[in-house]
Image 1 (cartoon, one colour):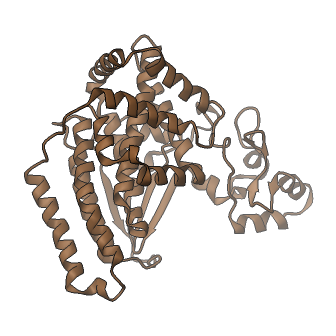
Image 2 (image 1 turned 120 degrees about the horizontal axis):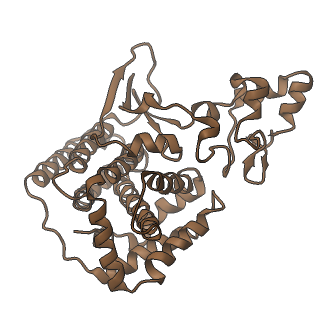
Length: 389
């Protein structure tokens, strides 16, 4: 099997009670079957202690308010302290590490919802590098469409080449990948509609030849930038953030933080004032624009290959772009609130709090992906209109 991971992957180390937040609050922690079985079989007082804090019917740890029942007042895990780390479930042992299998390819990532992982992902001036190693002793995972997988890998490689081109602004790069994938998406849907046997015929080969042609043409000649409508920019960005207030709250501070973002950027300023402030903010972060490049790449790396299952690669690129934009708007609000200064700690908090809302609630993730695909507000043209071209 092939294992791919970002270059910073093995640098992660949990800082426990020194963390500015905790991964043991805000969501239900799923317990794997093997660990549940072990809890049921534990004897004596230790077994009774553990079982009283586990919901066996739901397969999760019980919670006290929003916090895991094992999380003490010092933000340390009493299960580890009293029983040892080997009693943790897979979710707790692995987090923030995350794995996705695609046939003989396994992609490892760190979740940006962890503050330490967010720092490794974002606070690095170097371009993203993804390393591959081969382990011949491991068996392949579930079979996938290798032809489609290899095509998605080629497309993603081209996307990373675009996002890594620092001669252009991050907004220009986001526009380019949206336009590129918007052209390719119909071909992927055409491929999806073919029957199993017909996928092997000459028509399917032509589809993939067409994708290569689009990639080549796009590299040679970029579509001309579209005319920017600042009024539309202002209205749509506010509506994008408004939509997030309707999602499930993973953290009780989320509605307050998003409400403050809307108030600081939109309610207290006219459209013209907002536009001038945004220009000033973008200029103020130009030397650290790579931080938003890393955020964009994080979402592309984590989700793009999911198109192997639902064929919706444009939806995944929209998720990456819109997420980057919203995290940047949150940062702009903190910048404005802090006398036009934005620390790396504030940027990281914007990123990991957003990640928790979107990535650690299946309901939120499905709802967001559905909105991005079906809602006319999130058309490719509309998303491009909010970019600072």
